[in-house]
Figure 1: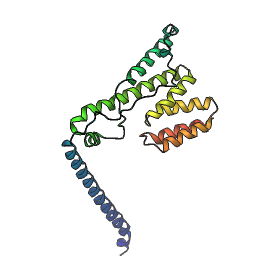
Figure 2: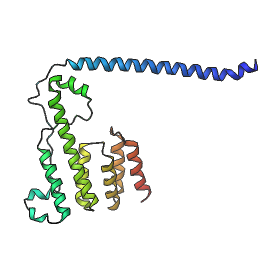
Figure 3: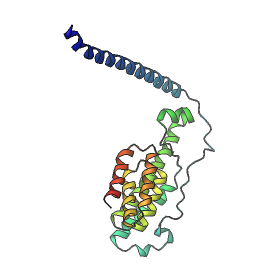
Length: 214
């Protein structure tokens, strides 16, 4: 009898674990069925008219684009030359047709726009990601070269384009810290916490460490 009482908690734990595993298996099976059903539907999704699709048009107003002033002679040092190249990439990529589809899977895109439009619409999404990457690389270059005022403007802009830019958050947080604007770091933390950022927890920890070490 004493042995039975000793084994009872183990039996209960094993039974609960079995029930939980069975429940998880059922949920996984249902999720897979739902996924395959949507995939099948997406394979035959009718094309929608995308001739008047509302594309994303970047607003470069306010960015420190010195090259737009037409004064290329101002780019004399190696730093200036690289900066000019990065600015040119931002400007040229901003002219491509773009859609921000970061929150959509390939299946979602097919269902929304039709399987026949998938390649075209995906290209618009790739253009958006390429433009966003160019803006980020420009901002990072300005930050690395201690051009903090310009870097701040560019990095603030890139965070309007994507929530998944952990390094942009931390670089911007460092700039705010150096300029004594702690409240803006707190606002960055709130922005991350309310976003769908894939690295949200890690980013928030880094931003909090900036404040704690101030």
